[in-house]
Image (cartoon, rainbow, N blue to C red; front, top):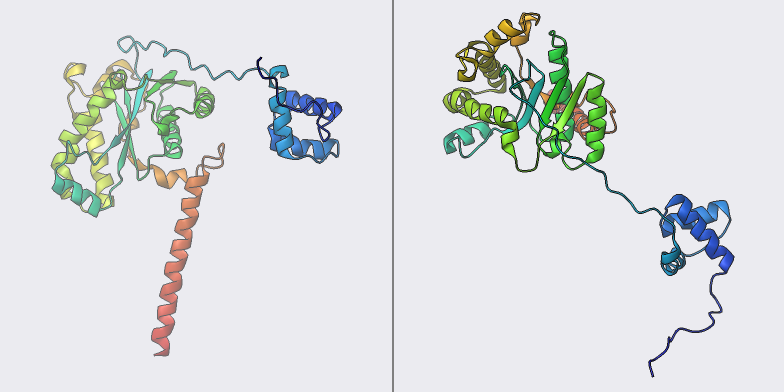
Length: 330
């Protein structure tokens, strides 16, 4: 006594079996959806059909579809990194620090920082073996700035005699590729041309970048907290940052290096390095990122900002010229 199907036995306006077969053939060949299949039918066969009709045909024949199931990208496990056996610059930890840290700075220092418009982010690269550090700054936390920082670190090290293969370890921030496997693949492809590789740490595992994380505390205690209120311009800020970086690399004694500075450790273990490597200038990444070029399209946001600054300068000159004409006619 069970009710049968209420569907009609004959549908007079049903799509012919030949057209349905053609739609399924295109579907298996292209993996397109209803909208793009509609365009393909019009372009190849001259057939004009509603995308809703194509959608219903695909639904009816879902069980007969031979499409291969989509396989997600396999990230794999994190390779083991032996800190203690690594030589100079074989393992470099990279991290991003938000300078205006409420746990480290006072309210007065934070207000002073914002009033002087100092860069908000500090980019740090730290060699695990020697504790040698490179720093850069930016106003924005972006993938373009992260890419620029990688290229800056590589160009500085390679141009001063560092020829060993370098393994970069980073967290899962979006500025280092994050969850985008496409960005990671392209970044690995780029770094491989310089004899380098990159390893992503596990999520919420700052201990895997322990050395660079600990150095951020030193930055607060020996640079930002004692010196910030005495800096009153961006030029002085970068000059002070360069002095601090030289102090950290060439003067400061590190207990992990038997009370030696990173430069002294490098001189003892890697005498082939250029002595100028210790004079590291902390650069502003935003200014360089706009000149990066069209590498996979990631320059577009920064390029837009460059054009916006050009228009802003143009309007400033325009208003100045307009005021000058008014004063002349008066």
